Amino acid sequence: MSRGKFAAQKMMSECGIDDPTNIPLDLIIYGRGATLIEKPLNNSEGRILFGKTKGIITVNSDIAYEGKRRFVIAHELGHFELHRSLMPVHNDTDATLEFFQNGHQETEANEFASELLMPENLFRDECASKKFSPELLRYLAERFQTSITSTAYKYFELGDHPICLFYSYNNQIKYWKRPEDYPHFIIDRIKLPPPEDSVAAEFFNENKLYRKEESKQQIWKSTWFELKDWESDNEFKFYEYCIITPKYNTVLSIVWEELK
Ligand SMILES: [Zn+2]
Image (cartoon, rainbow, N blue to C red):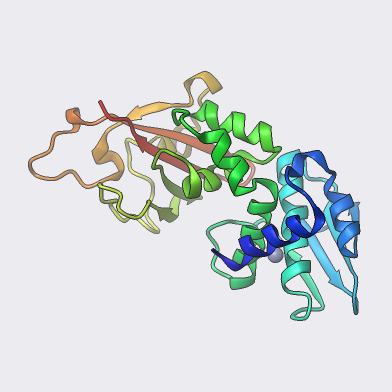
């Protein structure tokens, strides 16, 4: 188990929390010896200031989405629990809050936040024997009061159905992830634009945004994956669902196969 996830589970068991949606995050924070302040911040979403034994967590009051606000608060609490002797003050921008970024402490704080907001056992129960779909992710995000993006990463880790993730920014693929043992190979396009026939490319090239009911789009296997010589695109059913944030010009493509 990752260090961040372990720290979140340990804290929840110490505090007697089994479902984090039943208790306001600011009360958890007070209980751990820190203070939560909400106010406008320039160039950061969250911040933590460490005192000798306590800490002050500030979250940007301009954050429009409750799911994102909760994630930022939980991320800062993760720093408080895990990194208090390591840094006197810490700022988090949108970039440092990204799941895919590499900084060791940021990864730990994200894993902590993900586990605190979506505890593994509850998340597995909610996913069990449900078919993967954009609606399922929206249901889970509502159930756990989380952002669709953080819910998608959690589903990648724990969900019943294998999914692949491709993260693009400014019409360039930055990262991708596939489950271990996934039977298909991804065409590596890091630093290149998303494939022409992908849903992500429709956004970058034509500004196309699908309505909720149409957010599951059928694509070819060859759009994102290698097609072997003996295979034909018609044998496969692949789908792409894009979580698009126009403000930051980012697209998270979730790609999955449905067996015929
Ligand atoms: Zn951070």
